[in-house]
Length: 266
Image (cartoon, rainbow, N blue to C red; front, side, top):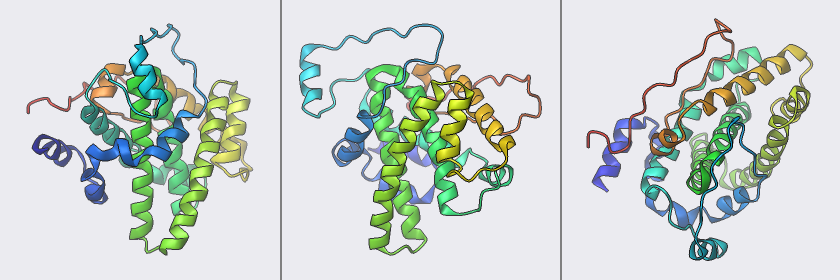
């Protein structure tokens, strides 16, 4: 536990995470409904050119996972949970929300924040689904942390508990509808992806095709950039950086930074 607290103190700067981190090791029990819903979303084929190796799963593991439990993973669950927390934190701390508000003419509201965060969380899920059972487990943890953060932000804003609960249910439904739409869009051509972004990100209110073009380009290059990151590093560190919405040099190729592992130097 001391090791866990030291890692989180060194890497996470969001004050609202205090109640989340105190239950970090209990996530597998409290996340049930989110995990089951997430596992029911469409399974993306790999966006990489090279085929992904098939992970061998024993009969016992298949049985216990069919019962709703998580079987043995490639890495310890606590390491994956910390990496998942870092990855979600990257979605909310390393994203330039002001740039999105300005370029996409979005109001500076909680709903706009959620739509931008949802988009980046989804791109992380697309990437981690390629990492076998450990990656899919990490996806469930990322989604759990997202809802914890949304609820915390709602409380800090002083939203009535009844209204917050009602809005959370509505946002949950919208989240999984958006995930399915984005999944179909990214596997389609640019027109299909633009249609998914128009329906969800812009809420069918975008009148400037240049904004759609900008978002389609952003998603494509970001998915490609995430694919260039080593899967083992992502599982162990959760370190993700985002390319800018508008590239100063369109031909530039950013090299991922060297990762810092959860137990490095401890």
